Length: 231
Image (cartoon, rainbow, N blue to C red; front, side, top):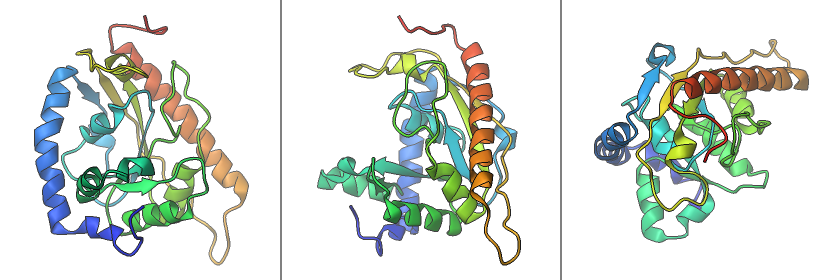
């Protein structure tokens, strides 16, 4: 894992240039290959930080999420992707940073909050690792916790079709349609002056996010020419 005092170098000009070049090379290809359509772009904040929270059904969900805006967003990645030095350098140059799955990775949480406080949007998959099927699974606490700590809105996103483009264990990316539904931002609750938010607020915030993700996922699935179960 990269040193915590250096990871914010991803905010520098070289990183932003790398991200823009990568976006111009990869995103148009992804959009054409998946015949992508996007609805709800008007819900994306034009300026300032926010947490983009998509459902997660495919490895392709990361570049798919990157299609929703041309300005840079930052991503968490599982720390094993940094084991290869060259790959780790590319990921860091593109503004990504590692997280250790299955642990209370406080360093990753601090980094995520620091990214938002520095003004960059952050992409987090609230379901954690890739899931299968039409039901949004119970959410991890991280996305809600980070958004509330940083005082930024969560923008929920339903991605329909990505599981058929690249299912689990697939070795090929299939040219099948993807549709994205972007929902209205869910504002972060504000703690009373000099006080803390009770745990019930975090739980209620997570429940609201879960319900909206399911609604958007259902809408997105209606716009692709197939339904569950995947054949």
